[in-house]
Amino acid sequence: MELKLEYYFTNYEENRVFKDIIKNAENVLNIFDIAQEYLKEKITNTDIKENRGELLSKNITFIGNYFIDEGTKIYPGVVIEGPVYIGKNVKIMPGAYVRPGTITGDNCVIGFNSEVKNSVLQNGAKVASLAFVGDSILGKSARIGSGVITANRRFDQQNIKLKMKTNEKLDTKKDFFGCILGDYSRIGASSVTSPGTLIGQYTWIYPSTSIYGFIPSQKRIYNKSNWVTEENIRVELKQ
Picture 1 (cartoon, one colour):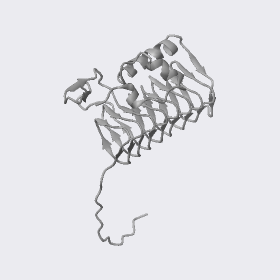
Picture 2 (tube, helix red, strand yellow):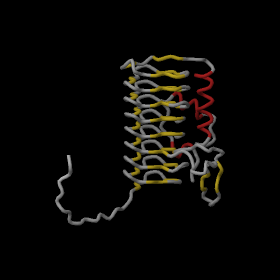
Picture 3 (cartoon, helix red, strand yellow):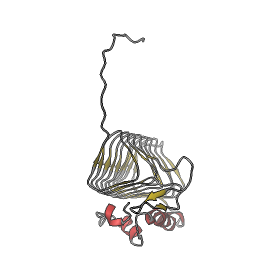
Picture 4 (cartoon, rainbow, N blue to C red):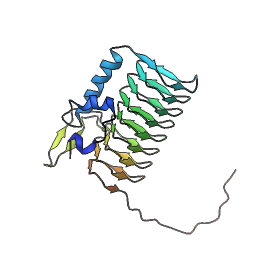
């Protein structure tokens, strides 16, 4: 298990918010708490409700405090529940739900009917349709495919533990922790990450793959499937 921040994120010089967040972070796990303190200071305590972007419908719901920067487009049916910080030129597609604790950089996408909660998306990160990103950190230009689930809580609701190189288990002190996805990495459609999954930079998780633990940088992860083909009878389905 690798916890060094630079193992996952090295392309954030243009991301002013993320630079502020990580300057006091000792490792990637610290980012979550620092990000929440950032939102508390910049959004909650200032009681800010500012949208510099473009609302493409009257059917958009805002709850709590938020800041939305220039060039961002918010489509019909979106719900934004603060505290939330949204960067420049972000697209929040129809039906998306942006939940408390979310921070995005610039040029991000939150897809149709997707849900993002308590997560940090760096510049250019994209979440496709019908996905759930909870308590996670996405690197620059990282990709979450359609239908992906970043599971963020254990069945027994206990703290999430990480298996270290020494085989010892590190208690994260968190009962909610989804995925850390490094710069330029991507998770293919309909995949699932177990709570506390860490994925290095430039790694591809192929579609319909369930993963857990630590996935190193520059890897391709996929399931090998053996197809079974049998003869089928002709049946005309009922109308």
